Amino acid sequence: MIDTILNEWWPETLHPDIREELGLERLVITRRRRRDQQFTVDVLENFRYSCAMCGFHAVLNGQATGIDAAHVRWHSADGPDALENGIALCKLHHWAFDKGILAIDDANVIRVAGAFVTQVEGGLPLESLAGCPLATPPRSLAIAEEFLEWHRSNVYLGA
Image 1: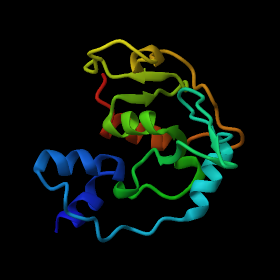
Image 2 (image 1 turned 180 degrees about the horizontal axis):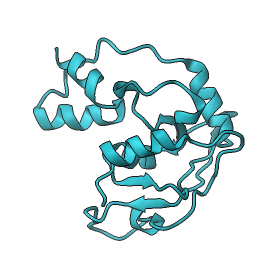
Image 3 (image 1 turned 60 degrees about the vertical axis):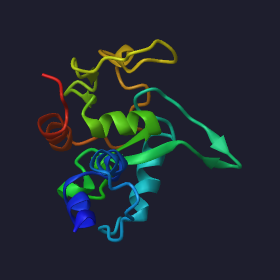
C-alpha cells in the first residue's frame, strides 16, 4: 500500500525523504509504472549530457555519470515519457527541482523559492542560480510550456 501511494503521488527522488520522515526507510519499493528507456537517452542527448541548471558534465569509464533525465511533470502525475517533458539535471538539482526549490519561468530563467535558505556556506549555493538562464539549453526540442506551468503550479514553492 505504501509503495502504491508513493508511486502514485511523488517522484522517486522524494521517496527516501518521505520514507525517512515516516520511519519507513527499510521497506522496499516493489511496483513502479514502467518507463520508456528511450526517454532517458533522448533527454540526455537533448541537453548534451549536462545539467541544464549548472552545466555539470562528468564521464566515468566512458559513461555519463551524475546526470538524470528528469520529468518536468512527474511520471507519478501522469507526466509522459516525452522529450518535451524532460530535462537533464545533476543529482542535486534534480532533487531541488522535485522538492519545489527550483523552477524555470516562461523565459527559461531559473527561479529559487524564497522559502529556501542554506544554513552554511560552501560550494555553489542554490540561491546563486536565481535569475540565471539555463546553463545548458536544450539542443533540439524545448521543454513544453504546459509541463513547466504544471511544475510551477503543483511543485514550486515560490511565488
